[in-house]
Image (cartoon, rainbow, N blue to C red):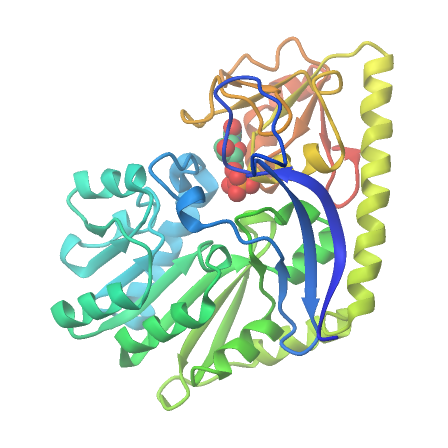
Length: 398
Ligand code: TYD
């Protein structure tokens, strides 16, 4: 069999559907589904089995905002400088432009945003950026080709993992990209996920978790190839792939591509056994996290969840963590505040800078922003507050 299951994360709700009130979700009503993860030994692609229709996930209520963190704003600013310097594009297109964290760094006449979540597209439209509040597909590519002929750089961060039909995605990109054009794709790295045991990268929106190996195989089908790579610390460890047409000999392929693939093979990303081992580590991680949380409860200490991320939704539901273990979460995102964690009925309270004052522990839901958060909350840490993380294994942060 080419496609084999290696991890079961149990019944899960849709990660970004924060609940307005406390309710019991049901499988019958389609509110819970079994989250299983598979490895394709031929294409080396890792994916979840369940396909939720995009319209159900990415609509005008989508709560995720790229601009919510200093780290992401800085990352996009840095990248925009690099793109201008290295590729000097006349026209750039961003697939999944969210609330404009990247496109705001470009001149209005040089950039096009594509964002199907109308609440987010509205933000960049209001700022005067040309934004299509549509899904990225061949119809849209045709429309854009008529209007603009071609685009020099097509960029997409943390979006392609969310789109089921990758053939359509790349055919549409191929159709619109100029002959010497560059595609830049940035998504969480499978290697980092396995190394960090961060099983919470898996949830309904992350249909795929890419590796250099899988990306290389995928691109071959469209006569594309990776010519450069960057490892990033964002989203808990991401890979940024620089891609070109194979026929474009102007861009040289750097040795970073080969070294990434070698590292992935050294780590065993091409073998099913590696994923089975990961699956065992995940179940150990659950046991250990529950042990720590139960001890905190027994000692009658106070704990708050910090960062109501989609990732935390996977952790809480997989580990069966309820209000008795973590009574409340806090988050800065307006769309999440006063709602409840999907499937868990744990309330999300509005962040304020004194929120940690009366707590002994904070469970780091947004562990990918560890540095930023620890820095921000250092006065409470000095007073004795301890952050608890589950990455790479459950422990208190020293
Ligand atoms: P993120 O980890 O980027 O996303 P995902 O939902 O894909 O797992 O989300 C970070 C969340 O953490 C977001 O809801 C904002 C919140 N957050 C805070 O509440 N305070 C902070 O200081 C930071 C950096 C993030």
